[in-house]
Image (cartoon, rainbow, N blue to C red; front, side):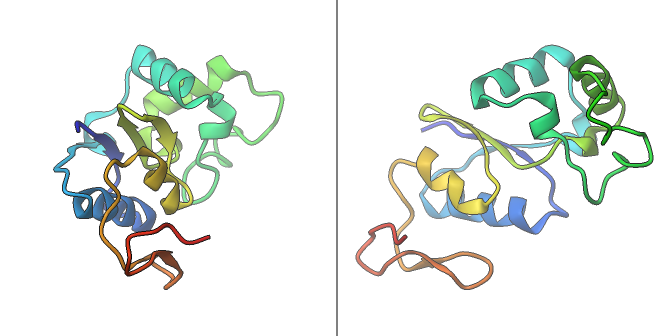
Length: 140
């Protein structure tokens, strides 16, 4: 299975998602989007595939969203996209693409919907919550 993760290595959720992908036996293509940036067609395609609007994909904390005035609901999707192209950190992460779909994997366990096979259990979330039991079954 081919998996692509748009990843920020400084983000705990993104690191946890990457770890779950690797635990499933897949070596994903890792795109550090803070280094590579985004293109408008790329963002539009990712958002369409994940059924997200630019507003839903906007990272509002630990980003310049507030200081750029992007939290105002009157800011258009086009203006949000322009800002995301200029400031890649404004796109929430991680975004994972697989043959099973494209998702913004927040919370991190969302990635399990994209993995086939699942990682072996037991597997816990970063906060200790059990996600996959010792028999390999999803919990919760």
